[in-house]
Image (cartoon, rainbow, N blue to C red; front, side):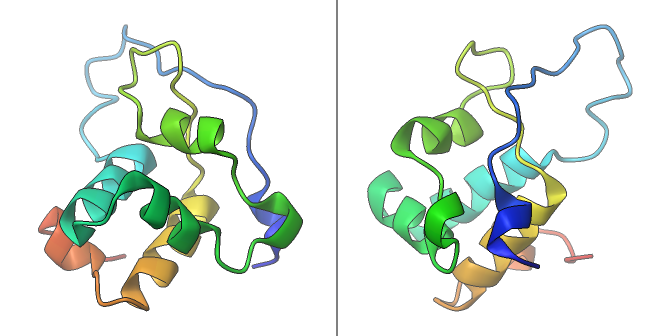
Length: 106
């Protein structure tokens, strides 16, 4: 995975008309659980997430969008690649997705 592949995606909002859409946890909700479980401030968590991303690191505004509720105008969809990067970075400090979300990483 290269830093260029983790560039911020275009802003995307989830559609509310599909009741089955929310059956699997979103990348955003999994990232939020990692941040919450870590006990770190949002700023420190963003720094950990941005490790290794160089020029494609997310800004504070993007970070807040990743952690925002899906119905929020600030919401920015987090890609699976970005989540995988975040999971890897948080694992380096001992925060595992299995513990954070109560499920097996896949």
